Amino acid sequence: MIDSPKTADDRGRLFEVISAHASVALFVVGDKQQCVLVNAAAEELSGYTLQQVRGRALHDVLLHKRPDGTPYPQAESPMGRALPQNRERGEEVFVHKDGHFYDVAFCVSPIREAGVIVGAVIEVQDISQRKRMDAQVEAERSLLNTVLEVAPLGICVADASGRLVRLNPAMKRVWGDAAPFAASVAEYRAYRGWFGVEEDGRPVEPHEWPMSRALAGEALVGPEIFRIEPFNAPGSRRIIALSAASVRDASGKIIAAVAMAFDITDMVAAQASVRDGESRFRALAVSVR
Image (cartoon, rainbow, N blue to C red; front, side, top):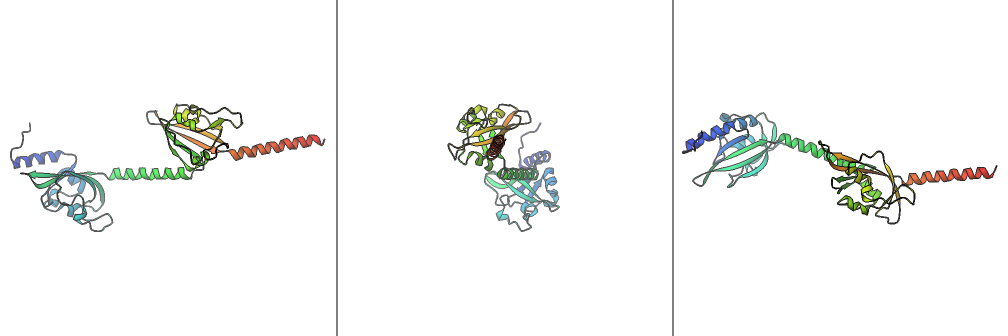
């Protein structure tokens, strides 16, 4: 059983016991920010023992220079400035005893005696791995954005509700720059389309677009052909090959869908022209027999 500490010495001993068993790195500094106590986790984090830092300003030990090697004045350090009146949190870059730099998150909590601030407890966590992962995720996101921007294929992404969250430039060229970001499958009605290439094709209902069907869990096989009316040219028609696929999380739940479109208007027109030419040639051949 742990009794409530009655004296300053009791509180000090209790703190030492608690800090020794804490998994987070703890630094205790005095009123002039001189290091008074560090726990085992802080020694492991910094590379310094208590004997090596006791009485020294923590800034001079762990924050004396920036990653580029230039001096880091204490007055410019969020953690190294005057002791705060209230708890403060932030991030810094520490210098390890062996010279390497590492990112940390800190929380400074003032210590008061009789209403006077006499020091502070500084909790520190190494966030280097998190920073590296964040940087990797950002690099991958940047690469994906670049791929979407330059892809010749029209690509559209919708979340699980059907809300369109991304249309790449190629998709905007297919539908026109005025293509709306529909907020649901029902709003796909704004996208006018007809099945097939013939003029008498049946209109496409919102739930019949490949994107809607992929969101509903249908496994689509290959692209389908549609005639569409682009938003920037009312009354005109384009012919597109359109496909879509579901995006599922680790549990198999559909969390999004992606649709891909390719404008085949010119190709269909060229094929029609070839067929027309062949028909004319056959008719001419018959007439001269």
